[in-house]
Image 1: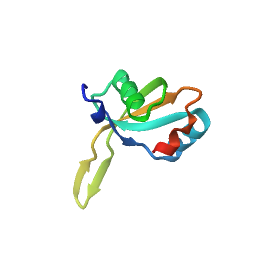
Image 2: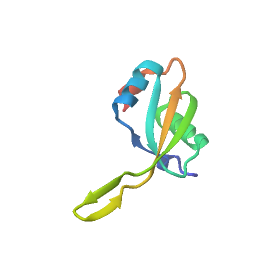
Image 3: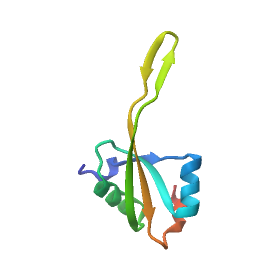
Image 4: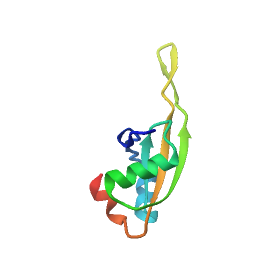
Length: 95
């Protein structure tokens, strides 16, 4: 991925993500499926002006949904757990 603005799709706002942010200083993002850890780190540091220590990624599989008698599936997506450096706790104000 060459364009850093296309890497991050948005924050993942769940209870688990909120607890990780408060306790461990980790932030969770929905990212482009073809983005790698290096691209994600560069994009977060560029867009939010913070220091990133570590990035973990998870491929999330889409859920099966049913509408009437038709069965379909939501899209697969990728999630990134970004660990911020020790002094970068004020990240929540920018989201």
